[in-house]
Image (tube, rainbow, N blue to C red):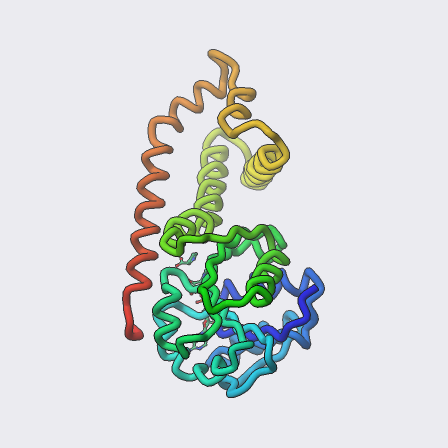
Length: 275
Ligand SMILES: NC(=O)C1=CN([C@@H]2O[C@H](COP(=O)(O)OP(=O)(O)OC[C@H]3O[C@@H](n4cnc5c(N)ncnc54)[C@H](O)[C@@H]3O)[C@@H](O)[C@H]2O)C=CC1
Ligand SMILES: O=C(O)[C@@H]1CCC=N1
């Protein structure tokens, strides 16, 4: 059970997904505070989820509090300058979800001994089906590791990384991945409409196919390749469709993940806030 006080910096899409997931799992509204410069953003979340709206950077927080950084990567330096004092208490954990921003940079901008966990969650967290990779610096104690794990586990599956450099690949895969899957759904829907289906039916069938296949793969001991062969009769319809996919999909996936990982590395590079 999560008993800690959790403060979100940032009130956008990712904060919303995590707060929705946490509330769904029974974390109380009293335990969660959200801060963003925009009163409209923070009060919208406060109202939607029955959490507390925090108008300015906190100066002190109860020991064992967790501050989740969920504003944009480019704002992190100016935000850390305002919140720095809070992390003088080694009991307060800084949990970043910012793409690209390395934990060494965060440590350099907070006190050297600050407890910092870097993570990469994704938006399915809002329905408890997230995938989050986590990396803890040496300054993070066992209880704080467990807290970070409990928070992210409450909104989906977690995976600890021992090499932070892999976070760029994770960001390219599971952080950005929901958008790829949604684009795939859009493309399937559009193609099915061209084949004559009405749009609502095309959308429903595409969605249930992706959902059902993911559930089947998750429940099976067989690999995706083996499961794919079960669908593919020699000389049948699937083989005909797969031939078209095969030609482009693998090189495309490689290009997409390479581009996203490269962007992740670039996002982390800027030491100063970019307008
Ligand atoms: N959206 C996604 O799927 C994922 C996003 N992330 C990371 O989450 C973070 C937030 O991304 P989104 O929610 O998509 O962005 P967003 O644009 O939806 O939200 C950003 C929020 O930050 C707030 N903000 C702006 N300046 C601020 C400041 N100085 N102090 C505090 N809050 C401030 C804004 O009011 C807004 O609520 C980023 O670092 C991103 O890399 C990580 C994983 C997935
Ligand atoms: O697009 C982005 O930069 C963020 C990080 C991963 C998903 N969304």
